[in-house]
Length: 306
Image 1 (cartoon, rainbow, N blue to C red):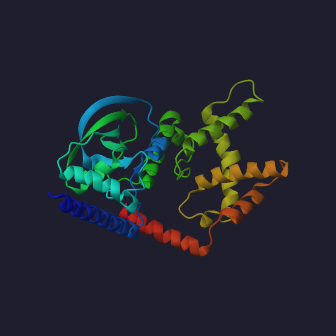
Image 2: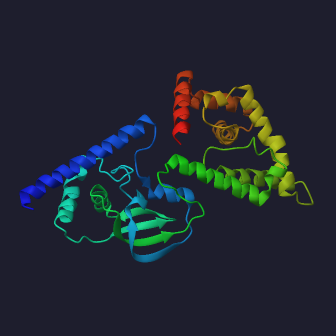
């Protein structure tokens, strides 16, 4: 191909790819879904892989690349370019592809069967747009007990992490035998480990006045009866859950405990009542009626499309 023909072709290729990105963004927005690639750092912050192993050069399927280390907002979930600023670099890669120039391998992290680009985002995007199925990559593999899935959003991953943390909590402490675990649920990762800390702190204070050490089970029952339940009863009395659609009473407990402690520190007194803490929290952070309706509608469509 002549230089002017290649220039025209790369311009056309980029515009087609960008149009595909816009269509994907539009369809995802109509469904209230995230349009970005998964962020490597956000994912690893959630699933916390423990070890990494250098796997060397491999040929990997492009369809299994689902995220990026630093450019996750620049490309759509199908790796089409979303921003005009990507144009010149994208076109130069496309030109090399059309001229059959061999490009360096990309660099990726591997989690399970899926990959996150460390270096080579434009090369992946061009290859995807040109219908290429496989690409050479330098692979570093990370281990995780939480598996990823194609098309998974951060919201879905968070839900999976919460399920994993709940299972770990139940398997370790068998809390379903002495706590109403159908009632104690959370919508954010990290809450079940926090729950363990709350029970252990309560256990510490109980043991201060005892010669024999109380068990985790007995401490958990005491925590539920003397700490958790009174706070939840006050939340129900103040109709707090209606102001936080999509959340649970377990979420409210964690938030109110934290807010209650903050109010005590600010006032310099331990005499702040739980009632004043719940009312103040609702006033500061609660959602109005219109916002609740919007959240309910979004939640309905989100569940429908998940």
